[in-house]
Amino acid sequence: AHIEPGSTVTGDKPVKKGARWAGSPARKVGRSKQRFPDYHPPRRRYWAWLYGATALLLAAVPVASALAGVAAVVGLIRLTGGSPYVGALLFAPVGALVYLALYATLTWVGVRLCSLGLRPGVTPVRSAQGWRLWTITRLLDDARTRFFPVYAGGLTPRWLRSLGATVGQDVEISTVLMIPKLTTVKDGAFLADDTLVGTYELGHGWMRTGETTIGKRAFVGNSGITQPGRKLAKNSLVAVLSSTPKKSKSGS
Image (cartoon, rainbow, N blue to C red; front, side, top):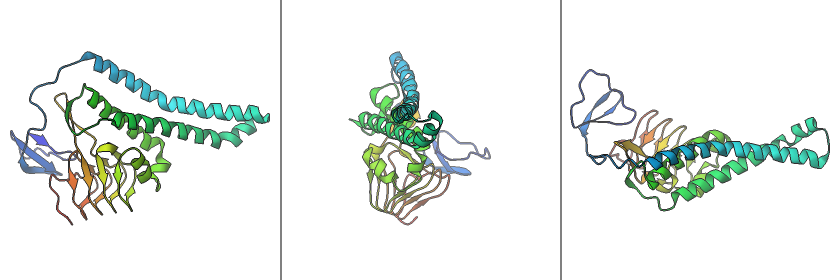
């Protein structure tokens, strides 16, 4: 059986074998299709170590950026030779800019490098592609929190284009999480706060991703989800805390 994201199973009716349920409250919408291989992929231990090391490295990115900002402030104070307290207040904005610039640069480089050779499909979690998908998601999930002024303004479409996403004209995007290389947002679309577009799904040690498209003038509400590989039709709306159906019609 398969329960779609964002669904609420009340327990009034049993979810039978091979069924696919969706909605809140959830109801049967069809039969579950094979989404992942029915066998487990090889358990390569070195990938577990690599994931752990990567987590530590990602945690060090904001620390290194903050230290660079502090170093910039200290350097300016020494250069001007004034009071350290007054200098700290005067040059704090410079330190903040250095922090944001370095953090954005490291995030951009990490996402672009991990996107090289990325392709849709099913892959083991413990694999090069699985590791890259996970790393991209972690980088951008952290970025939308630390770069909130950017994501809350009009720079988000340009930022996502620079990361590899295909973003049309007159698009409004807030704190979205996506795999940029595998995402297309067409003209006039709107992605509200905390939306999840594409990324990946997990099952039995496998990871599945796909090319995800948001149609022209489509709207994805707050905390809405568009699963990997799905296409949201033009002029359609996904409500708050809802997920995109498997098939959508224009104007729905």
